Image 1 (cartoon, rainbow, N blue to C red):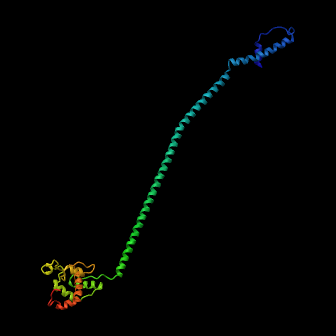
Image 2 (cartoon, rainbow, N blue to C red; image 1 turned 90 degrees about the vertical axis):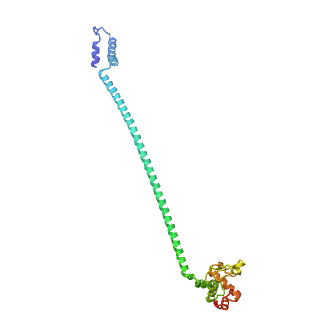
Image 3 (spheres, one colour; image 1 turned 45 degrees about the vertical axis):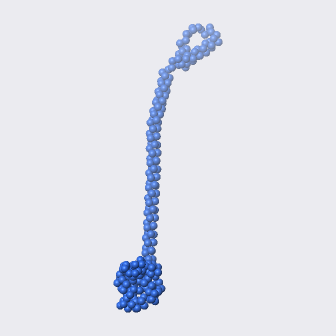
Length: 269
């Protein structure tokens, strides 16, 4: 209001008496003065901003710049944080992958150990089973040997050959001559030599020499040999075949040996 009065005071004053103006003119002038006083400051404020308004605008601009700067810095910090976050994420993923790989390797190693242990156990069980079977077989053989009669052994001489030949004849159900008759035949014919061979008599001239302990020719030996005893130079086989020949020719070897005085007047038979 004081500004309005001041502005009104600056207007040219018309010196005239009130008694000369009509009331209407006076009213119009008052309204116009009020309008001028009101519009003039507004136009000045638009054309020339006051220091306070300029200061306010400057502060607003500064705030805007600060806000922009803060935003740039925040964006920069965000950009700086983003690679760090990405690196951390990669490290975490790598750590997780490594852990998974380690776990897989550990599982594979454990499975391999378990497989090897199972194979070793199976091999051990197989070995134990084989050992048990071998032991059972040995025990069986031992029991059979204990139950079976011991195999008779014979001396490797004339007495032993005679004894074995007599057992072979008995085992095959053949007549068994006396040991005296067998000894007399062996001594008279070959002096007890199972490898003796006559290459000068009539049989030799015919191509069938007398061979062995009782000097038998091959055709006669083959005719009277027992199965499993077919070696003319084997003393036991030779005695067996000779005994059977005497059984067929003389009734027995004892008859033949007795007729020859058991060697006192022996002649070929």
